[in-house]
Image 1 (cartoon, protein in one colour):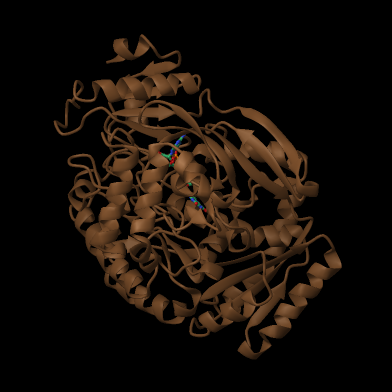
Image 2 (image 1 turned 180 degrees about the vertical axis):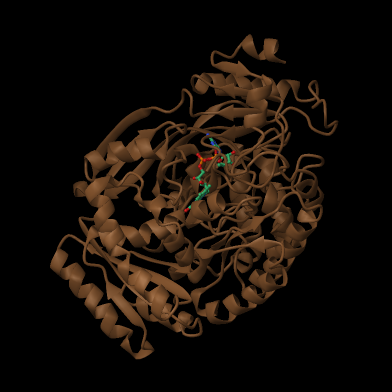
Length: 564
Ligand SMILES: Cc1cc2nc3c(=O)[nH]c(=O)nc-3n(C[C@H](O)[C@H](O)[C@H](O)COP(=O)(O)OP(=O)(O)OC[C@H]3O[C@@H](n4cnc5c(N)ncnc54)[C@H](O)[C@@H]3O)c2cc1C
Protein backbone atom coordinates (compact mmCIF):
# COMPACT_ATOMS: atom_id res chain seq x y z
CA UNK A 1 0.00 0.00 0.00
CA UNK A 2 2.84 2.36 0.94
CA UNK A 3 4.41 2.19 -2.57
CA UNK A 4 1.06 2.88 -4.22
CA UNK A 5 0.40 5.92 -2.00
CA UNK A 6 3.91 7.30 -2.54
CA UNK A 7 3.18 7.51 -6.28
CA UNK A 8 0.86 10.48 -5.72
CA UNK A 9 1.47 11.67 -2.14
CA UNK A 10 4.11 14.37 -1.44
CA UNK A 11 3.87 14.18 2.37
CA UNK A 12 5.24 11.51 4.73
CA UNK A 13 3.98 7.94 4.69
CA UNK A 14 4.86 5.94 7.80
CA UNK A 15 4.03 2.44 8.96
CA UNK A 16 6.75 1.47 11.41
CA UNK A 17 5.78 -0.27 14.64
CA UNK A 18 6.41 2.77 16.85
CA UNK A 19 4.16 5.02 14.80
CA UNK A 20 1.37 2.44 14.56
CA UNK A 21 1.40 2.00 18.35
CA UNK A 22 1.37 5.76 18.92
CA UNK A 23 -1.56 6.30 16.57
CA UNK A 24 -3.53 3.40 18.06
CA UNK A 25 -4.61 5.78 20.82
CA UNK A 26 -6.18 9.14 21.37
CA UNK A 27 -7.29 10.41 24.80
CA UNK A 28 -10.11 7.85 24.92
CA UNK A 29 -9.98 4.53 26.76
CA UNK A 30 -9.85 2.63 23.46
CA UNK A 31 -7.15 1.20 21.28
CA UNK A 32 -7.46 0.65 17.51
CA UNK A 33 -4.36 -0.15 15.47
CA UNK A 34 -4.23 1.66 12.12
CA UNK A 35 -2.65 0.26 8.93
CA UNK A 36 -0.65 3.35 7.97
CA UNK A 37 -0.18 6.98 9.05
CA UNK A 38 0.08 9.83 6.51
CA UNK A 39 1.17 13.44 6.97
CA UNK A 40 -0.16 15.51 4.03
CA UNK A 41 1.88 18.46 2.70
CA UNK A 42 -1.11 20.28 1.25
CA UNK A 43 -4.74 20.07 0.17
CA UNK A 44 -3.79 18.41 -3.13
CA UNK A 45 -2.26 15.51 -1.19
CA UNK A 46 -5.56 15.08 0.65
CA UNK A 47 -7.62 15.35 -2.54
CA UNK A 48 -5.48 12.72 -4.31
CA UNK A 49 -5.66 10.45 -1.30
CA UNK A 50 -9.46 10.62 -1.12
CA UNK A 51 -9.72 9.81 -4.85
CA UNK A 52 -7.30 6.90 -4.49
CA UNK A 53 -9.13 5.49 -1.47
CA UNK A 54 -12.50 5.76 -3.25
CA UNK A 55 -11.10 3.89 -6.28
CA UNK A 56 -9.26 1.19 -4.33
CA UNK A 57 -11.55 0.68 -1.38
CA UNK A 58 -12.15 -3.01 -1.95
CA UNK A 59 -8.55 -3.88 -2.80
CA UNK A 60 -7.01 -3.38 0.61
CA UNK A 61 -8.62 -5.30 3.39
CA UNK A 62 -7.24 -4.80 6.89
CA UNK A 63 -5.01 -7.83 7.64
CA UNK A 64 -6.35 -8.33 11.17
CA UNK A 65 -9.94 -7.45 10.44
CA UNK A 66 -11.51 -8.85 7.30
CA UNK A 67 -14.44 -6.47 7.51
CA UNK A 68 -12.35 -3.33 7.42
CA UNK A 69 -11.67 -1.81 4.03
CA UNK A 70 -9.73 1.31 3.11
CA UNK A 71 -10.87 4.44 4.91
CA UNK A 72 -9.48 7.75 6.22
CA UNK A 73 -9.53 8.92 9.84
CA UNK A 74 -8.47 12.56 10.16
CA UNK A 75 -6.41 13.51 13.13
CA UNK A 76 -4.96 16.69 14.58
CA UNK A 77 -3.60 16.59 18.16
CA UNK A 78 -5.37 13.32 19.06
CA UNK A 79 -6.88 14.64 22.33
CA UNK A 80 -10.30 13.29 21.39
CA UNK A 81 -11.79 11.49 24.41
CA UNK A 82 -14.35 9.51 22.41
CA UNK A 83 -12.11 7.46 20.11
CA UNK A 84 -12.96 9.80 17.23
CA UNK A 85 -9.32 10.13 16.15
CA UNK A 86 -8.46 6.41 15.87
CA UNK A 87 -9.31 3.92 13.13
CA UNK A 88 -8.37 0.64 11.46
CA UNK A 89 -7.12 1.97 8.14
CA UNK A 90 -5.40 5.27 7.16
CA UNK A 91 -4.74 7.98 9.77
CA UNK A 92 -4.26 11.43 8.24
CA UNK A 93 -2.37 13.73 10.62
CA UNK A 94 -2.49 17.46 9.82
CA UNK A 95 -0.23 18.77 12.57
CA UNK A 96 3.15 18.09 10.90
CA UNK A 97 2.73 20.25 7.76
CA UNK A 98 -0.78 21.66 7.36
CA UNK A 99 -0.47 23.90 10.42
CA UNK A 100 -0.02 27.39 8.93
CA UNK A 101 -1.66 30.77 9.23
CA UNK A 102 -3.25 31.49 5.83
CA UNK A 103 -4.44 35.07 6.41
CA UNK A 104 -5.48 37.67 8.99
CA UNK A 105 -6.45 38.66 11.55
CA UNK A 106 -8.42 41.25 9.56
CA UNK A 107 -11.08 43.55 11.03
CA UNK A 108 -14.78 43.18 10.20
CA UNK A 109 -17.61 45.46 11.37
CA UNK A 110 -15.91 48.34 13.22
CA UNK A 111 -13.33 46.00 14.72
CA UNK A 112 -15.92 44.34 17.00
CA UNK A 113 -15.29 41.18 15.01
CA UNK A 114 -12.23 39.98 13.09
CA UNK A 115 -11.51 37.12 10.75
CA UNK A 116 -8.55 34.78 10.54
CA UNK A 117 -7.84 31.85 8.21
CA UNK A 118 -5.79 28.84 9.33
CA UNK A 119 -5.00 25.28 8.37
CA UNK A 120 -6.46 22.51 10.54
CA UNK A 121 -3.14 21.28 11.95
CA UNK A 122 -2.34 24.55 13.77
CA UNK A 123 -2.26 23.99 17.53
CA UNK A 124 -4.62 26.25 19.48
CA UNK A 125 -1.72 27.48 21.60
CA UNK A 126 0.01 28.83 18.43
CA UNK A 127 -3.28 30.25 17.17
CA UNK A 128 -3.82 32.05 20.48
CA UNK A 129 -0.36 33.65 20.31
CA UNK A 130 -1.33 35.25 16.99
CA UNK A 131 -4.76 36.43 18.13
CA UNK A 132 -3.63 37.67 21.57
CA UNK A 133 -0.99 39.89 19.94
CA UNK A 134 -3.94 41.91 18.66
CA UNK A 135 -5.98 41.54 21.84
CA UNK A 136 -8.31 39.04 20.15
CA UNK A 137 -9.65 35.65 21.15
CA UNK A 138 -11.61 32.64 19.89
CA UNK A 139 -13.86 32.38 22.96
CA UNK A 140 -14.93 28.74 22.49
CA UNK A 141 -11.43 27.57 23.54
CA UNK A 142 -11.35 24.27 25.42
CA UNK A 143 -9.90 23.18 28.74
CA UNK A 144 -7.45 21.24 26.53
CA UNK A 145 -6.35 24.46 24.79
CA UNK A 146 -2.65 23.89 25.46
CA UNK A 147 -2.69 20.52 23.69
CA UNK A 148 -5.41 20.52 21.01
CA UNK A 149 -5.49 21.84 17.44
CA UNK A 150 -7.92 23.75 15.23
CA UNK A 151 -9.04 20.85 13.00
CA UNK A 152 -10.04 18.85 16.08
CA UNK A 153 -12.07 21.80 17.34
CA UNK A 154 -13.87 21.83 13.97
CA UNK A 155 -14.29 18.04 14.00
CA UNK A 156 -15.75 18.00 17.50
CA UNK A 157 -17.58 21.36 17.59
CA UNK A 158 -15.54 22.16 20.66
CA UNK A 159 -16.59 24.34 23.54
CA UNK A 160 -15.28 25.54 26.88
CA UNK A 161 -15.73 27.71 29.92
CA UNK A 162 -16.85 30.78 27.93
CA UNK A 163 -19.39 28.87 25.84
CA UNK A 164 -22.10 29.85 28.30
CA UNK A 165 -21.98 33.37 26.90
CA UNK A 166 -20.13 33.02 23.60
CA UNK A 167 -21.22 29.71 22.05
CA UNK A 168 -19.37 26.82 20.46
CA UNK A 169 -17.00 26.37 17.51
CA UNK A 170 -19.94 26.28 15.03
CA UNK A 171 -20.67 29.90 15.97
CA UNK A 172 -17.19 30.99 14.85
CA UNK A 173 -16.81 29.27 11.47
CA UNK A 174 -17.38 31.82 8.70
CA UNK A 175 -16.35 29.47 5.91
CA UNK A 176 -14.25 26.36 5.36
CA UNK A 177 -12.57 24.48 2.54
CA UNK A 178 -13.82 20.91 2.73
CA UNK A 179 -12.89 17.87 0.63
CA UNK A 180 -15.90 15.66 -0.03
CA UNK A 181 -15.92 11.93 -0.86
CA UNK A 182 -15.34 12.59 -4.58
CA UNK A 183 -11.96 14.08 -3.70
CA UNK A 184 -12.98 17.61 -4.75
CA UNK A 185 -12.38 20.55 -2.42
CA UNK A 186 -15.31 22.96 -2.02
CA UNK A 187 -15.58 26.31 -0.30
CA UNK A 188 -18.41 25.78 2.18
CA UNK A 189 -20.11 28.98 3.27
CA UNK A 190 -23.62 30.23 4.04
CA UNK A 191 -26.01 31.23 1.23
CA UNK A 192 -29.65 32.25 0.97
CA UNK A 193 -32.09 29.33 1.01
CA UNK A 194 -33.78 30.71 -2.12
CA UNK A 195 -30.58 29.93 -4.06
CA UNK A 196 -30.63 26.22 -3.20
CA UNK A 197 -31.86 25.26 -6.70
CA UNK A 198 -28.57 26.56 -8.19
CA UNK A 199 -26.47 24.43 -5.86
CA UNK A 200 -25.10 20.98 -6.49
CA UNK A 201 -26.90 17.77 -5.60
CA UNK A 202 -25.38 17.26 -2.13
CA UNK A 203 -26.79 20.58 -0.86
CA UNK A 204 -30.23 19.85 -2.34
CA UNK A 205 -30.32 16.37 -0.80
CA UNK A 206 -29.48 17.71 2.66
CA UNK A 207 -32.07 20.45 2.25
CA UNK A 208 -34.77 17.97 1.18
CA UNK A 209 -33.95 15.52 3.97
CA UNK A 210 -34.24 18.25 6.60
CA UNK A 211 -37.43 19.68 5.11
CA UNK A 212 -39.09 16.27 4.74
CA UNK A 213 -38.31 15.33 8.34
CA UNK A 214 -38.72 18.75 9.88
CA UNK A 215 -41.11 17.73 12.65
CA UNK A 216 -39.15 14.64 13.66
CA UNK A 217 -35.92 16.66 13.79
CA UNK A 218 -37.41 19.50 15.84
CA UNK A 219 -38.98 17.02 18.26
CA UNK A 220 -35.70 15.16 18.75
CA UNK A 221 -33.70 18.26 19.65
CA UNK A 222 -32.40 17.88 23.21
CA UNK A 223 -33.43 20.85 25.29
CA UNK A 224 -29.98 21.73 26.52
CA UNK A 225 -27.53 24.58 26.00
CA UNK A 226 -25.06 22.57 23.93
CA UNK A 227 -25.02 19.17 22.29
CA UNK A 228 -22.48 17.23 20.21
CA UNK A 229 -24.40 13.96 19.90
CA UNK A 230 -25.41 12.74 16.42
CA UNK A 231 -25.40 14.90 13.30
CA UNK A 232 -26.30 18.47 14.14
CA UNK A 233 -29.16 19.20 11.75
CA UNK A 234 -30.92 21.92 13.68
CA UNK A 235 -29.00 25.00 12.55
CA UNK A 236 -28.35 24.17 8.88
CA UNK A 237 -31.40 26.16 7.80
CA UNK A 238 -31.89 29.29 9.88
CA UNK A 239 -33.39 32.69 9.08
CA UNK A 240 -33.54 31.88 5.36
CA UNK A 241 -29.85 31.02 5.32
CA UNK A 242 -28.45 27.57 4.48
CA UNK A 243 -25.09 26.81 6.11
CA UNK A 244 -23.60 23.35 5.66
CA UNK A 245 -20.79 24.15 8.10
CA UNK A 246 -23.36 23.89 10.91
CA UNK A 247 -23.56 20.18 10.08
CA UNK A 248 -19.93 19.55 9.12
CA UNK A 249 -18.58 21.13 12.32
CA UNK A 250 -18.87 18.40 14.91
CA UNK A 251 -19.23 15.55 12.40
CA UNK A 252 -15.85 14.08 13.44
CA UNK A 253 -14.52 13.85 9.90
CA UNK A 254 -17.27 11.39 8.91
CA UNK A 255 -18.71 13.59 6.14
CA UNK A 256 -15.69 15.41 4.73
CA UNK A 257 -12.19 16.68 5.48
CA UNK A 258 -11.54 20.31 6.37
CA UNK A 259 -8.33 21.71 4.88
CA UNK A 260 -8.72 25.39 5.74
CA UNK A 261 -11.07 27.39 7.94
CA UNK A 262 -11.92 31.05 8.29
CA UNK A 263 -12.93 31.92 11.82
CA UNK A 264 -14.57 34.87 13.46
CA UNK A 265 -12.62 36.10 16.48
CA UNK A 266 -13.48 38.88 18.90
CA UNK A 267 -11.70 41.34 21.20
CA UNK A 268 -10.66 39.72 24.47
CA UNK A 269 -12.01 41.10 27.72
CA UNK A 270 -9.72 43.45 29.67
CA UNK A 271 -10.74 42.84 33.29
CA UNK A 272 -12.32 39.88 34.99
CA UNK A 273 -13.10 38.79 38.53
CA UNK A 274 -14.51 35.71 40.14
CA UNK A 275 -17.16 35.23 42.76
CA UNK A 276 -16.36 31.95 44.49
CA UNK A 277 -19.41 30.28 46.05
CA UNK A 278 -19.04 27.47 48.58
CA UNK A 279 -21.98 25.04 49.01
CA UNK A 280 -22.35 22.48 51.79
CA UNK A 281 -25.55 21.08 50.34
CA UNK A 282 -26.42 20.50 46.68
CA UNK A 283 -30.18 20.96 47.07
CA UNK A 284 -30.31 24.70 46.23
CA UNK A 285 -28.01 24.31 43.21
CA UNK A 286 -30.67 24.55 40.49
CA UNK A 287 -32.26 27.70 41.93
CA UNK A 288 -28.88 29.20 42.67
CA UNK A 289 -27.73 28.73 39.08
CA UNK A 290 -30.96 30.31 37.80
CA UNK A 291 -30.34 33.37 40.05
CA UNK A 292 -26.71 33.70 38.99
CA UNK A 293 -27.61 33.45 35.29
CA UNK A 294 -29.93 36.48 35.58
CA UNK A 295 -26.74 38.56 35.94
CA UNK A 296 -25.17 37.11 32.74
CA UNK A 297 -21.76 36.00 34.01
CA UNK A 298 -19.04 35.22 31.47
CA UNK A 299 -18.62 31.76 32.92
CA UNK A 300 -20.18 29.63 35.63
CA UNK A 301 -17.99 26.65 36.45
CA UNK A 302 -18.01 24.20 39.30
CA UNK A 303 -16.02 21.43 40.98
CA UNK A 304 -16.60 19.12 43.91
CA UNK A 305 -14.98 18.56 47.30
CA UNK A 306 -12.90 15.65 45.99
CA UNK A 307 -11.30 17.93 43.40
CA UNK A 308 -10.55 20.54 46.06
CA UNK A 309 -9.07 17.92 48.40
CA UNK A 310 -6.79 16.71 45.62
CA UNK A 311 -5.64 20.25 44.90
CA UNK A 312 -4.78 20.95 48.52
CA UNK A 313 -3.09 17.59 48.92
CA UNK A 314 -0.93 17.91 45.84
CA UNK A 315 -0.64 21.65 45.67
CA UNK A 316 3.16 21.66 45.03
CA UNK A 317 2.16 20.50 41.50
CA UNK A 318 0.56 23.88 40.96
CA UNK A 319 3.75 25.69 41.91
CA UNK A 320 5.56 24.50 38.82
CA UNK A 321 6.34 27.27 36.30
CA UNK A 322 5.22 30.04 38.67
CA UNK A 323 8.65 31.47 39.54
CA UNK A 324 9.82 32.24 43.09
CA UNK A 325 7.57 35.24 43.87
CA UNK A 326 4.62 33.76 42.00
CA UNK A 327 5.09 30.62 44.11
CA UNK A 328 5.04 32.54 47.41
CA UNK A 329 1.94 34.51 46.42
CA UNK A 330 0.23 31.37 45.21
CA UNK A 331 0.99 29.48 48.45
CA UNK A 332 -0.29 32.41 50.44
CA UNK A 333 -3.54 32.38 48.47
CA UNK A 334 -4.13 28.78 49.56
CA UNK A 335 -4.18 29.60 53.28
CA UNK A 336 -7.97 30.00 53.52
CA UNK A 337 -8.43 26.52 52.02
CA UNK A 338 -5.98 24.97 54.48
CA UNK A 339 -7.83 26.72 57.28
CA UNK A 340 -11.21 25.57 55.95
CA UNK A 341 -9.97 21.98 55.71
CA UNK A 342 -8.74 21.99 59.32
CA UNK A 343 -11.75 23.75 60.87
CA UNK A 344 -14.97 22.83 59.12
CA UNK A 345 -14.09 20.46 56.28
CA UNK A 346 -14.62 21.19 52.62
CA UNK A 347 -17.83 22.41 51.05
CA UNK A 348 -19.53 19.82 48.77
CA UNK A 349 -19.36 22.03 45.72
CA UNK A 350 -17.43 25.14 44.72
CA UNK A 351 -18.84 27.33 41.95
CA UNK A 352 -17.00 30.07 40.10
CA UNK A 353 -19.01 32.89 38.56
CA UNK A 354 -16.83 35.14 36.42
CA UNK A 355 -17.71 38.70 35.46
CA UNK A 356 -15.75 40.70 32.93
CA UNK A 357 -15.62 44.01 31.14
CA UNK A 358 -13.57 46.99 30.06
CA UNK A 359 -13.90 48.84 33.38
CA UNK A 360 -12.52 47.23 36.54
CA UNK A 361 -14.85 49.15 38.85
CA UNK A 362 -17.95 48.04 36.95
CA UNK A 363 -16.71 44.43 37.08
CA UNK A 364 -16.25 44.68 40.87
CA UNK A 365 -19.78 46.11 41.16
CA UNK A 366 -21.23 43.20 39.18
CA UNK A 367 -19.53 40.77 41.57
CA UNK A 368 -20.94 42.62 44.58
CA UNK A 369 -24.39 42.61 42.97
CA UNK A 370 -24.20 38.83 42.65
CA UNK A 371 -23.23 38.40 46.28
CA UNK A 372 -26.25 40.53 47.21
CA UNK A 373 -28.59 38.70 44.81
CA UNK A 374 -27.82 35.29 46.30
CA UNK A 375 -27.63 36.32 49.95
CA UNK A 376 -30.91 34.52 50.77
CA UNK A 377 -29.21 31.22 49.98
CA UNK A 378 -26.97 31.89 53.02
CA UNK A 379 -23.83 30.60 51.35
CA UNK A 380 -20.24 31.54 51.97
CA UNK A 381 -18.99 33.67 49.07
CA UNK A 382 -15.73 35.33 48.21
CA UNK A 383 -14.76 37.89 45.53
CA UNK A 384 -11.22 37.30 44.32
CA UNK A 385 -8.86 40.17 45.00
CA UNK A 386 -6.28 39.56 42.31
CA UNK A 387 -5.58 37.69 39.11
CA UNK A 388 -3.24 35.36 41.00
CA UNK A 389 -6.00 34.41 43.37
CA UNK A 390 -8.49 33.90 40.52
CA UNK A 391 -5.91 31.74 38.72
CA UNK A 392 -5.74 29.48 41.74
CA UNK A 393 -9.38 28.54 41.29
CA UNK A 394 -9.00 28.24 37.51
CA UNK A 395 -5.95 25.99 37.92
CA UNK A 396 -7.90 23.68 40.20
CA UNK A 397 -10.84 23.58 37.77
CA UNK A 398 -8.69 22.95 34.68
CA UNK A 399 -6.07 20.66 36.21
CA UNK A 400 -8.23 18.39 38.36
CA UNK A 401 -8.33 15.65 35.78
CA UNK A 402 -4.54 15.66 35.32
CA UNK A 403 -3.97 15.63 39.09
CA UNK A 404 -6.25 12.68 39.63
CA UNK A 405 -4.67 10.65 36.93
CA UNK A 406 -1.09 11.32 38.07
CA UNK A 407 -1.59 10.47 41.72
CA UNK A 408 -3.53 7.26 41.86
CA UNK A 409 -1.25 4.39 41.00
CA UNK A 410 -2.47 1.24 39.25
CA UNK A 411 -5.46 3.04 37.78
CA UNK A 412 -6.10 4.86 34.50
CA UNK A 413 -8.59 7.44 33.35
CA UNK A 414 -11.65 5.99 31.70
CA UNK A 415 -13.64 8.64 29.83
CA UNK A 416 -17.02 7.11 28.97
CA UNK A 417 -19.53 9.15 31.02
CA UNK A 418 -17.35 12.23 30.66
CA UNK A 419 -19.62 14.81 29.13
CA UNK A 420 -23.31 14.56 29.98
CA UNK A 421 -25.57 17.60 30.05
CA UNK A 422 -29.05 18.29 31.45
CA UNK A 423 -30.84 21.57 31.97
CA UNK A 424 -29.51 23.30 35.12
CA UNK A 425 -32.96 23.31 36.77
CA UNK A 426 -32.86 19.49 36.84
CA UNK A 427 -29.50 19.37 38.65
CA UNK A 428 -30.81 19.21 42.24
CA UNK A 429 -32.62 15.97 41.35
CA UNK A 430 -30.27 14.71 38.67
CA UNK A 431 -27.00 14.97 40.65
CA UNK A 432 -28.09 12.91 43.70
CA UNK A 433 -29.52 10.23 41.37
CA UNK A 434 -26.26 10.20 39.44
CA UNK A 435 -24.36 9.95 42.69
CA UNK A 436 -26.47 6.94 43.75
CA UNK A 437 -25.60 5.13 40.53
CA UNK A 438 -21.89 5.91 40.92
CA UNK A 439 -21.97 4.76 44.58
CA UNK A 440 -23.00 1.27 43.41
CA UNK A 441 -19.71 1.07 41.51
CA UNK A 442 -17.42 2.68 44.07
CA UNK A 443 -15.29 -0.42 44.51
CA UNK A 444 -14.40 -0.23 40.80
CA UNK A 445 -13.72 3.45 40.29
CA UNK A 446 -12.52 6.72 41.78
CA UNK A 447 -13.88 9.93 40.35
CA UNK A 448 -14.13 13.69 40.72
CA UNK A 449 -16.89 15.89 39.40
CA UNK A 450 -16.24 19.15 37.60
CA UNK A 451 -18.05 21.00 34.90
CA UNK A 452 -19.82 23.90 33.33
CA UNK A 453 -22.58 24.33 35.94
CA UNK A 454 -24.19 27.25 34.12
CA UNK A 455 -25.08 24.84 31.33
CA UNK A 456 -25.66 21.71 33.45
CA UNK A 457 -22.68 20.04 31.73
CA UNK A 458 -20.60 17.73 33.94
CA UNK A 459 -17.38 15.87 33.32
CA UNK A 460 -16.94 12.64 35.22
CA UNK A 461 -13.76 10.89 34.26
CA UNK A 462 -13.31 7.89 36.55
CA UNK A 463 -10.06 6.14 37.30
CA UNK A 464 -10.28 2.38 36.85
CA UNK A 465 -8.01 -0.59 37.19
CA UNK A 466 -7.81 -1.88 33.64
CA UNK A 467 -6.20 -5.13 34.74
CA UNK A 468 -9.48 -6.32 36.22
CA UNK A 469 -11.19 -8.76 33.91
CA UNK A 470 -14.61 -7.12 34.25
CA UNK A 471 -13.56 -3.57 33.25
CA UNK A 472 -15.39 -3.72 29.91
CA UNK A 473 -18.51 -5.08 31.59
CA UNK A 474 -18.48 -2.28 34.21
CA UNK A 475 -17.98 0.38 31.57
CA UNK A 476 -20.91 -0.87 29.51
CA UNK A 477 -23.18 -1.46 32.49
CA UNK A 478 -22.51 1.89 34.13
CA UNK A 479 -22.68 3.71 30.80
CA UNK A 480 -26.11 2.22 30.19
CA UNK A 481 -27.41 3.32 33.61
CA UNK A 482 -26.01 6.84 33.43
CA UNK A 483 -27.30 7.40 29.91
CA UNK A 484 -30.76 6.13 30.88
CA UNK A 485 -30.75 8.79 33.58
CA UNK A 486 -29.58 11.53 31.18
CA UNK A 487 -32.30 10.61 28.68
CA UNK A 488 -34.92 10.59 31.45
CA UNK A 489 -33.96 14.21 32.18
CA UNK A 490 -34.14 15.10 28.44
CA UNK A 491 -30.39 15.75 28.33
CA UNK A 492 -27.62 14.86 25.92
CA UNK A 493 -25.02 12.11 26.34
CA UNK A 494 -22.34 14.51 25.08
CA UNK A 495 -22.28 18.29 25.23
CA UNK A 496 -18.86 18.86 23.71
CA UNK A 497 -16.61 15.75 23.63
CA UNK A 498 -18.65 14.12 20.83
CA UNK A 499 -19.70 10.53 20.04
CA UNK A 500 -16.71 8.73 18.55
CA UNK A 501 -16.53 5.00 19.17
CA UNK A 502 -17.56 5.27 22.81
CA UNK A 503 -20.97 6.93 22.42
CA UNK A 504 -22.17 6.04 18.93
CA UNK A 505 -23.88 2.87 20.28
CA UNK A 506 -26.02 5.04 22.57
CA UNK A 507 -27.35 7.45 19.93
CA UNK A 508 -30.47 5.33 19.39
CA UNK A 509 -31.18 5.47 23.13
CA UNK A 510 -30.94 9.25 23.09
CA UNK A 511 -32.68 10.04 19.80
CA UNK A 512 -34.77 6.96 18.91
CA UNK A 513 -34.57 4.81 15.76
CA UNK A 514 -36.17 7.33 13.38
CA UNK A 515 -33.56 9.98 14.08
CA UNK A 516 -30.77 7.43 13.79
CA UNK A 517 -32.14 6.52 10.34
CA UNK A 518 -31.95 10.19 9.39
CA UNK A 519 -28.31 10.18 10.53
CA UNK A 520 -27.70 7.16 8.23
CA UNK A 521 -29.21 9.08 5.35
CA UNK A 522 -26.97 12.08 6.04
CA UNK A 523 -23.92 9.81 6.07
CA UNK A 524 -25.02 8.22 2.79
CA UNK A 525 -25.54 11.59 1.08
CA UNK A 526 -21.98 12.65 1.83
CA UNK A 527 -20.10 9.39 1.99
CA UNK A 528 -21.96 6.53 0.27
CA UNK A 529 -18.88 4.27 0.25
CA UNK A 530 -18.13 4.91 3.95
CA UNK A 531 -14.55 6.03 3.42
CA UNK A 532 -14.58 8.76 6.08
CA UNK A 533 -13.93 7.71 9.68
CA UNK A 534 -16.18 4.62 9.80
CA UNK A 535 -17.81 3.50 13.05
CA UNK A 536 -18.33 7.02 14.39
CA UNK A 537 -21.80 8.64 14.32
CA UNK A 538 -23.21 5.59 12.46
CA UNK A 539 -22.13 2.02 13.27
CA UNK A 540 -20.05 0.11 10.71
CA UNK A 541 -19.61 -3.66 10.75
CA UNK A 542 -16.29 -4.60 12.39
CA UNK A 543 -15.17 -0.97 12.56
CA UNK A 544 -17.03 0.50 15.47
CA UNK A 545 -20.25 2.00 16.68
CA UNK A 546 -21.32 -1.05 18.70
CA UNK A 547 -20.94 -2.07 22.35
CA UNK A 548 -19.12 -5.25 21.25
CA UNK A 549 -16.51 -3.11 19.49
CA UNK A 550 -15.97 -1.07 22.66
CA UNK A 551 -15.57 -4.23 24.75
CA UNK A 552 -13.02 -5.69 22.35
CA UNK A 553 -10.97 -2.49 21.95
CA UNK A 554 -10.36 -1.30 25.49
CA UNK A 555 -6.70 -0.23 25.68
CA UNK A 556 -4.67 -2.79 27.60
CA UNK A 557 -1.03 -1.86 27.97
CA UNK A 558 -0.96 1.73 26.89
CA UNK A 559 -1.80 4.69 29.09
CA UNK A 560 -4.76 6.18 27.30
CA UNK A 561 -3.89 9.58 28.72
CA UNK A 562 -0.77 10.02 26.63
CA UNK A 563 -2.41 12.48 24.26
CA UNK A 564 -3.67 14.66 27.08
C1 LIG B 1 -7.74 16.96 29.43
C2 LIG B 1 -8.74 17.20 28.31
C3 LIG B 1 -9.64 18.23 28.43
C4 LIG B 1 -10.57 18.47 27.41
N1 LIG B 1 -11.41 19.54 27.53
C5 LIG B 1 -12.29 19.81 26.53
C6 LIG B 1 -13.15 20.95 26.60
O1 LIG B 1 -13.10 21.75 27.54
N2 LIG B 1 -14.01 21.15 25.59
C7 LIG B 1 -14.06 20.33 24.50
O2 LIG B 1 -14.86 20.59 23.60
N3 LIG B 1 -13.26 19.26 24.39
C8 LIG B 1 -12.36 18.98 25.36
N4 LIG B 1 -11.53 17.89 25.25
C9 LIG B 1 -11.60 17.03 24.06
C10 LIG B 1 -10.64 17.48 22.92
O3 LIG B 1 -9.46 18.04 23.46
C11 LIG B 1 -11.28 18.51 21.98
O4 LIG B 1 -12.41 17.96 21.34
C12 LIG B 1 -10.30 19.06 20.94
O5 LIG B 1 -10.82 20.18 20.29
C13 LIG B 1 -9.85 18.03 19.93
O6 LIG B 1 -8.77 18.59 19.22
P1 LIG B 1 -7.61 17.68 18.62
O7 LIG B 1 -6.75 18.57 17.79
O8 LIG B 1 -6.93 16.91 19.66
O9 LIG B 1 -8.46 16.73 17.66
P2 LIG B 1 -8.33 15.19 17.36
O10 LIG B 1 -8.46 14.40 18.61
O11 LIG B 1 -7.15 14.92 16.53
O12 LIG B 1 -9.64 15.00 16.45
C14 LIG B 1 -10.91 15.25 16.95
C15 LIG B 1 -11.97 14.85 15.91
O13 LIG B 1 -11.90 15.74 14.80
C16 LIG B 1 -11.70 15.03 13.59
N5 LIG B 1 -10.80 15.81 12.73
C17 LIG B 1 -9.50 16.12 12.98
N6 LIG B 1 -8.99 16.80 11.95
C18 LIG B 1 -9.98 16.94 11.03
C19 LIG B 1 -10.06 17.51 9.72
N7 LIG B 1 -9.01 18.10 9.16
N8 LIG B 1 -11.24 17.44 9.05
C20 LIG B 1 -12.32 16.83 9.61
N9 LIG B 1 -12.30 16.25 10.82
C21 LIG B 1 -11.14 16.30 11.53
C22 LIG B 1 -11.08 13.71 14.02
O14 LIG B 1 -11.30 12.66 13.08
C23 LIG B 1 -11.75 13.45 15.34
O15 LIG B 1 -12.97 12.81 15.13
C24 LIG B 1 -10.60 17.63 26.27
C25 LIG B 1 -9.68 16.58 26.16
C26 LIG B 1 -8.76 16.36 27.16
C27 LIG B 1 -7.78 15.23 26.99
